[in-house]
Image 1 (cartoon, rainbow, N blue to C red):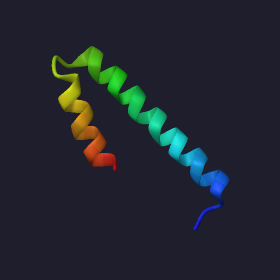
Image 2 (cartoon, one colour):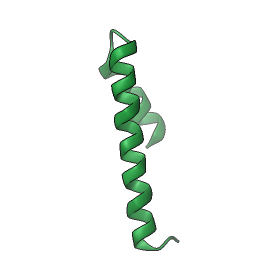
Image 3 (cartoon, one colour):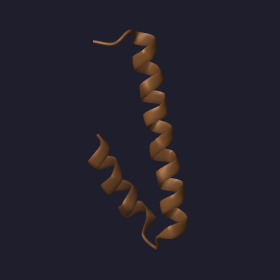
Length: 44
């Protein structure tokens, strides 16, 4: 559907977004791991 380069770039951005959300959640929540797992399940 997409060229491989574009797909890998989108995947890389997606992974970075998860990392940023996890980082923000870790600072904002006493339960960052649970928030990360919920976010990961929601996005994937």
